[in-house]
Amino acid sequence: MRDVLARLDEWWGKGETVALATVVGTYSSAPRQVGASMLVGPAGEAVGSVSGGCVEGAVYELGQQVLADGRPVFQRYGVSDEDAFTVGLTCGGIIDIFVEKVDPESYAQLGEVAAAVRDESPVAVATVISGPTERLGTRLVVWPEHVDGTTGSERLDDAIRDDARGLLDAGRNGQVSYGVDGQRRGEGLTVFVESFAPPPRMIVFGAIDFAAAVARMGSFLGFRVTVCDARPVFATATRFPGANEVVVEWPHRYLAAEAEAGRIDKRTVLCVLTHDPKFDVPLLEVALRLPEVAYIGAMGSRRTHDDRISRLREIGLTDAEIGRMSSPIGLDLGARTPEETAVSIAAEMIAQHWGGAGTPLAERDGPIHVG
Image (cartoon, rainbow, N blue to C red; front, side):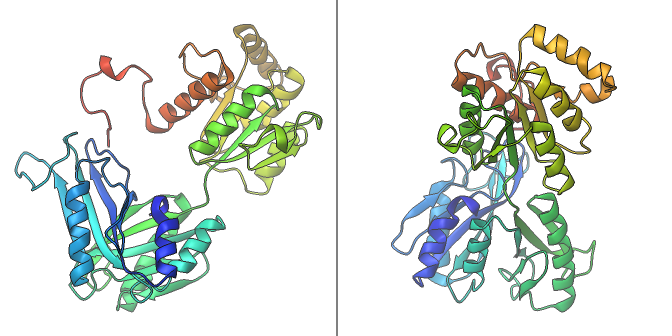
């Protein structure tokens, strides 16, 4: 829902009724991730996408139906060995879509959810997507400290609250199954939990021209971007319009303080672009010993890389710790310009995150999207 939330909140604030279609499950080579949404607006407008075009027309018709009768609908699209559904995906995958009516009466908490997302405060929305008719479409909105809404069952509410907070803490969306009255490990009722965790962080060290391009790319990919450099003449907001913040501090001190404050986690990306041993060696000593981080990349030539490895070993880092670093940073795309280099760094980050090999798709067999 995050991708259409601003428009949905605008209509909701005007008291309009909208149909919200959300991808709640994907199988095999699905074109969109769980949580992708499409709106059917009050005047028939279509906003967003659930499949990149494959089933949008059919989902739009479902949205019109939900607007007309107010009843939520769960629909699967795709092809399997046993069944051929009404509309298929050209990629051969399967997606599950839940379509529901949204207005101030049916979704009283939407304004608070939208405000939390704007403020980058964590919140999860748990919606019953299958089960008894009287519970279908009921929801809980779950914050770290409180809950609003109900499914009509206190036991079920308690179970959903705990599971939603676990998914929110992990920054994941997902389905959870229960018995019809909230029995754990039961069957008969399914809840979709959409987590709106604060965006992951990208910290770019080194206020150079390449850093400006990497910051823009990070922002484009949905990161909250910080640029850090010890030199105030270079670390200025005007030089890095793509960053959310620019910090003047020695990189290793800044990273250590952020880690101590609990602001570095397993989704955090670190791009070390200083390629100067007086900056990057103490910084990498801190970075490579962090318990959890998504990606650590360090820029430099082969000669710089070899010198960096020697210096890191001299100060006591193990081969296993050094092995957490991508150096030289980025995939081999033949990049030359700062913008091209930013693409190569982003490509390596994405490949590591999803387990991609970084090889041309034309040279591979099998599904493009796995899982």
